[in-house]
Picture 1 (spheres, rainbow, N blue to C red):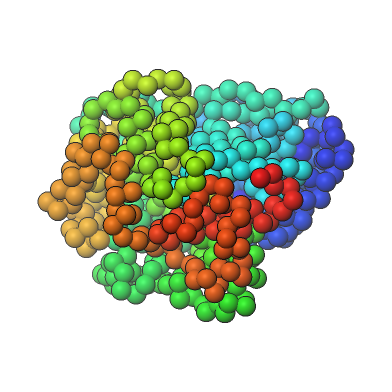
Picture 2: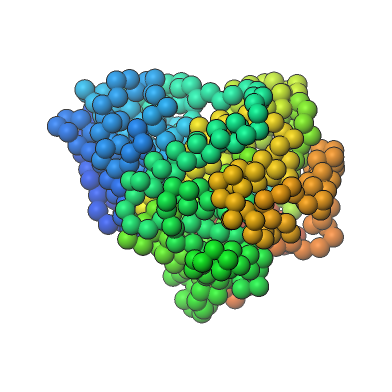
Length: 583
């Protein structure tokens, strides 16, 4: 991401301790060097990318721009982008037509300091409740506070749904800066100011071919702004699905020939399809089965997990703390020499992600249909399913700017939940970690691409119809090749694919809410993220009695390996916090 850490100097003892902790933690993250300065009552630490990438720091006399993440301005990256940002006339009303990427930016100009995130607040910036510190590192921020406690709602969200949503972290004392806020920093402290980030509230009628051209141009522009300014190779994933293939097509359309890779077991659909596509198109596909990357003996496991903990900034999305180092090896390969890595994440902006009918819906319906991945019997008496879902509903409404509205919302507004809530939370951690090492291109989360995606009528989103049309318009040979759906993308989706999505859309919210608990009681569950989870390994890194997490869960009941892995991750985090954790 490069990295940023800011602490107010009004309490010298607090500030110096926080800075010392940040220096130590940034070294554990892997940052090779740090830049430090004092500006308008604030101490700043900035770290460049760990592996390499565009410049992220510009100092001109008393003025300064420091960026964490992948930042574009006026179609440029690196020093030209930083200069363009420094030359902007008004930071309280930023011109978002000029800005792109996922980032945190700090600007000090003419004696005034501003701190803000990308359009969706996806690059994570943590701050304490008193606004004394801001940090792109969760562990650095937590280390600076004398006492911390777990936020029960966020703990349950992490365990059940992979990540906390909204501005919450698993610690009550730390939040993330929301996309609707900009921090102004001065001698007296920090003030959060509102900043508007509008999205279209209705779909837009237009001829299909014209719509495809609009999307092609917007995607092309984002790709061009990143690829044209990036050194060396570009690395691109390929799987059996639509999203990665559309990214590959968009890169090829701009004259880029990326290094293509796929992850998974040799017999998996993703690996099989990626290899077929590469063979048909005449390019190599790098393959890695991360689960088989290396054998870790139980006695080596604590050292591996500690390294993972600092590289993942404490809490990886899926609790992948207990893996063998394959993720880090894959990441380093994606960015060798400071190369840009592309992602197909957030591609569901073109699709009906929540599988809801095309009619108005309540935020509560989304909460019940999508976020109720729990069996209440797994939790302690502290958990209340109704309260949990109401809190999720409230976070959704806050993100949409409709706080307190319990009545049905327009379907186009429901679509905004995907970029504003789901993408921000799920991909925010990934973006923030990947961006530490080098540039990271996530074109489908660009706000102009999202804006166009929200205007696509729902009937074109079902079963990926429009996305397949867009792919076919950009790269017909790539679209005609097999996919993991059982059909190619140069024609309409298969009956099987359409029926699969239809059968989910017609299920009522009350039934979808109970689906996870029902399946859990029928059989054990696991996910694709694996890890070394047997007692022989886990007992070496956590207390299998789960003394910290037993307040929230009944671990002995849980038969979902993914959930238990995430709870183990929280238990490890609790042990790391030690005596500073208030139980």
